Image 1 (cartoon, rainbow, N blue to C red):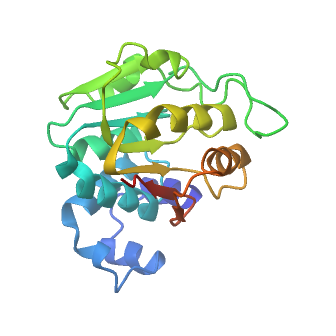
Image 2 (cartoon, rainbow, N blue to C red; image 1 turned 45 degrees about the vertical axis):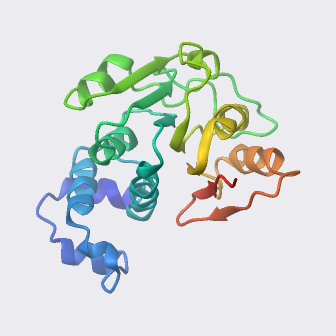
Length: 229
């Protein structure tokens, strides 16, 4: 996060320097020109809280699952950096964005390290304005899963990005989205291996405890689960 803020201040940093800094010199990620241009633009706009590797994970699995059909969702939108990354590559697929747009809800202090009201420096209007150039973006303001009440019960998803930070919201996201995920669809969660968001890992471990599904550790803090038949 600090690295990206520093990079955002220096608009003329050469990509080759960034690649060396992030140890990506010999990685095929350096050939993905549209993705890199998009990520760099988001960093410069000071909207992207995801690392380059985390952003690439979203880009890779999003584009891989688009042929499955179905909608896309993000739970935990904040200022819209992840949503804009998704919007750049989702084509005309509907994107459903869920957030209070006024900060963190009530948290369980026995599990979570965040506080109620964290990330309140955003608003629905600001995010809508930030994403105004994209079509088929649907905003669902409020506490999840109540905020999903306006979606048809039979809505299916090919890709979901969870960035809810806390135990209850992450568990609610899994309970809602996983049964509605297309076979072969993917859920990526931020903060599974984050030291400051232990509730995320607890929610995943609890939800998948008695299932055959395997969730995979991705760099930097993410995990991914793919829906089996």
